[in-house]
Length: 163
Image 1: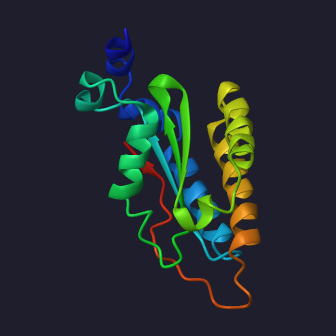
Image 2: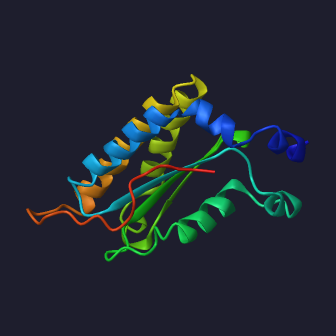
């Protein structure tokens, strides 16, 4: 059943959920957010898992952790990158934070971000939900990694990754 569900979703579905204009606005929101803290935020939306993940019954979390590495979110100077990952075929939301931030933020705080995003996605408000999630992650990063007047560094691309 899982294989069928994933084969029904493709990249076009992700682009229907988040059209090009929404992707541009989200990238701008990430860039704006990164002016207020010393961290890095990446957003990735994937329609379905690759077959290799489905064959071995890998979870959305495992895929998110793999993409955290592939997108080099782990490779920030202060180990404070955050990946917000959506897997549309399973309605899964994962947040993967690097060790510099994750040790300072409780599981409850991450669950709050995920819960808010889940409500918006269930209502079909993908862009609004991601904007709010970026804002919540921004608050966590600003608290833990304030800029202290230093010019922000942009270590990673701001564009949303759609797979």
